[in-house]
Figure 1 (cartoon, rainbow, N blue to C red):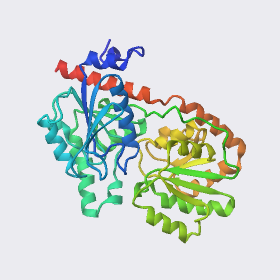
Figure 2 (cartoon, rainbow, N blue to C red):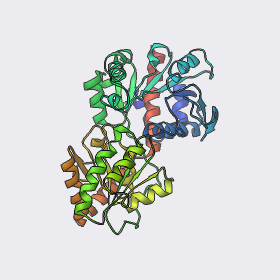
Figure 3 (cartoon, one colour):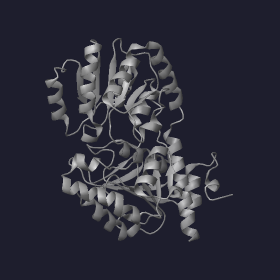
Figure 4 (cartoon, one colour):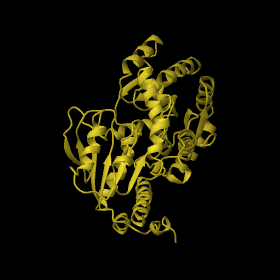
Amino acid sequence: MNDSQSFSDSSTKLGDIAARAGLRRVHFIAWRDLSDPEAGGSEIHAHEIAKRWAQAGMDITFRTSYAPGLAQVTWRDGYRVVRKAGRYAVFPRAAIGEIIGRYGRRDALIEIWNGMPFFSPLWARGPRLTFLHHVHAEMWNMTLPNSLALVGKTLESKIAPRAYRSTQIVTLSDSSKRELVEDLGFASDRVSVVEPGIDGSFTPGAQVCASPLVVAVGRLVPVKKFDRLIHVLARLRRRNPTLRAIIVGEGYERPMLESLIAKLGAEEWIELPGRVSDDELINLYRQAWVVASTSAREGWGMTLTEAAACGTPAVVTDIAGHRDAVENGVTGFLVTNDDDFFDAIDQIICDPDLRSRMSKAASSRSERFRWDTTARRVLEVLAVEAQRHRAR
């Protein structure tokens, strides 16, 4: 029996896996946490894992940056959240805090590398995992001036991979793993793929909208390319006069998107409701004819899987992450340009038989994605790392 097999018995409880590996106290370090105004899929992923580990009896501390209006120290679903230091100062301060043991002993460390790494291999002893959902690449130029973007890209592509050469990386999809191996040079055997989950509340309903409705969900930031989606929707509206669209999310690009919608005369049929409750989101997924994503980079695209669980097919950009979240031609379409985006949405809207087949396929495929499975598989990877550490 090899190391991974020793922890892979499906009947073994999370607490037993942790105890067997000596993983009672685990610290997470991250740029943001779930309550941050800019939280997205990465924060949901980390929270769902930390919550389940805490429920299994593990002592979990989540160290992240401070956000206005949020308590510096709090508890969420059984684990401790520590929010101190600003967006950039959190990186050295979290490292120093771990080095001097400010937050107590730990048996393992989880680093969430979201653009800027914490460089934990240089200062952290003991078992470690790094969550790295995707390569950021051109995202640096979308959010930073050219000079700083060059620094970010160099750090990501040239410097950091050398420091993390022996670190076990966990990513969300096979397509993201290929990018990490081919673009950043990580060894294939040091990158584990653990698919994300979805909450069981995302289920089909009988509330499909009477007229075509396109729904998109995500932070209103450059990487999501919602301006591109709005232009495509404006073309579709001319062909389908009853089309409506709802873009759910909040972010600093809201004023620009609102201006674009006004310029196109689309205020009456494109809505930007901001953040919505879970129940409202489920209802929107169920009402939608299509869920769309024009994002330039994704580790997966969990909103697509949530929508799929509600029986909604997807039309998305053909990028790493999306290629695993959407089965092309079965649960939706992967597209490469605006014309293809237009044609794919139009085809689903105009062909009820196709829409029905994709809806059923999307709902069926989504059944395999559960957070309990994700939390368990990540813990198994960490347990193997703990075993390797003891052997060394």
